[in-house]
Structure formats: structure tokens, C-alpha cells
Length: 109
Image (tube, rainbow, N blue to C red; front, top):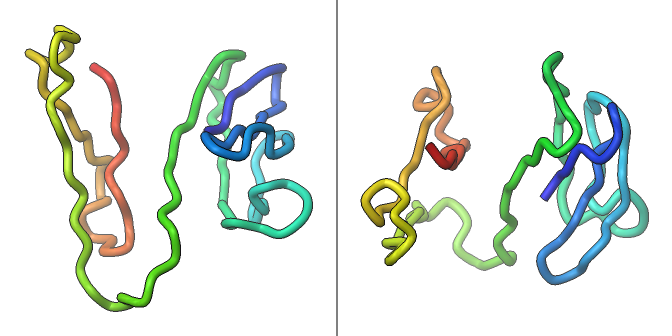
């Protein structure tokens, strides 16, 4: 998860690893974590309307031996939340469907 903590500073936090460093502004090839062995590399463009508290969430899945095999992105109910009638929701960015490598952006609406 990336969180804007101060102006153009983004803090990187892993669900199982905790703090993974920080970086500032847009980055063409930013290693995650920001030091040590990279788990992934992101291309990050900071929006002109960014604000402290903005959050970018994404997930990494463990390596496997099933390259070139179609994967499934599954959703489940959020029982009792009242959100979207207790259903999950996926919102696709414009043009994303033409990019077979891309995953949907999940937005609470």
C-alpha cells in the first residue's frame, strides 16, 4: 500500500512486511521495497490533485510455475458492511480492457 504522508512523499507499507520505505513524486521505475531486494518495480505517476492521506492499494501474488495460464480474480460479499448492498465492486479504468496484463482498480463507491 502506498500512502501520501507529506506533500509529495509516499510511504510504502506491506501487509506482512510492514514498512518498506518511501519515495517522492512520480517515479519511472521504483523498486518496492525502496531498498534491498525488490519484490516488484512500479511506474508511479503522481496526480496533480494528490493530497496527504491519499492511498494506492495493490497486491502481489507469490511466484508460481503456471506462467501463461489464465488467472481468476474473484470477489466475495462484504456481509454486514452495508457497502454496495453487501456486494464487492470492481471499477475498470478507461482503456484498461485493451491491456491483457492489467488488473482492475478496486474503488469503494
